Picture 1 (spheres, rainbow, N blue to C red):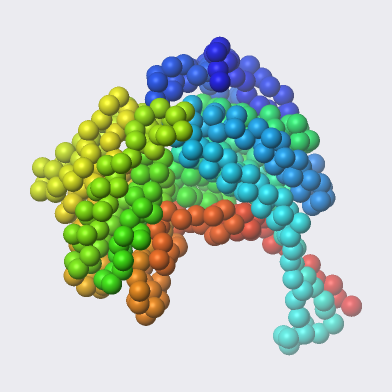
Picture 2 (cartoon, one colour):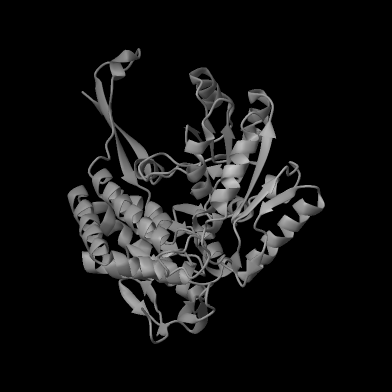
Length: 477
């Protein structure tokens, strides 16, 4: 796609601006230089925040149908350039092209949902005469935009996770300062181009790249920013929460999502789905299937089939249509993941397949009988590694799933409706998937976790609620 190295620019107040300093963006797979990316200083960040702050009056007054139309025009433009968009994702994130195309499809759907929700923001009437002293009054609530939204996004879904912040922000009439992940800024600048073409008012979207300390800290602490929405690590998310003061904050943080396979389940019908959940995009997915707990009666059959399927996965170039698994986002992530595999082996666990690496490509790895204190079990691996352990009773399985600092999503396959309902009650997570893997997500559902997996909910309707505030209006006759 690319024959020359592009020198990118900040997008601030509807203009493309040069940076003072630049950094090379390197392909995680090939090591080639993809582009030169501007590195923001504090003045650049201030300019972006100021542009968003000035534009918030314009966005606040923009009718819902106009906000919806802008989003609809954006969807049309993105649809027309879907293949180009997928290639950008594959290059900067080393996401296999088939998976990247799937992300683009979801991104289009996400912005469509945002266009629809822009026309559905509403309040309710209040029956004041239900309370003594409320006679003679009528009232209603409205939802109003917060103002400036600071959005800090990760590398793993550089289009769709940006959409889950930018889409509802625009739908609700807010403005945005977007800091994309350092490894995946090309996607963010690309969507800025499309929103400019779609007629989004100047200053409504500002894209700025640079270090988390310079850009992120400034966004989080600046009084002109009304809300911070962040997806990333628990350590950074907790730091944001501590610095944000009275700002609204939504955090989508880590996970080591688990699946229970109950007795009586036909494992042949679920293995393909479970392998996909474990290894899609090299396991670099917040709800990637990391832990599988299988009833002892099914354990040997499940492991045999799972390992056989894993061995068929193809590693290689993300631009190859046949590639299932490509490079991790950085060499340091490969080193970390390999060290966790070695820790598990040294602690008595068995590596049933995988464990090796070639450059930044880590083989899909299946680990058996890993103790709960091992890093592959209790921390977020964010790599193509999955552990499979057996359990004896369903009570034990619930305890194994809940024995985690995280609580984003969990799944259970069971033929027993009573067990399904009990699991829905007992599993301490933000979402319970019955007869599916925890990696399931569609873009209109509420999405978020408990414990160290974060606070607040995404999913366009629910994000719009987070990005607006309620106002009560009361008339006395």
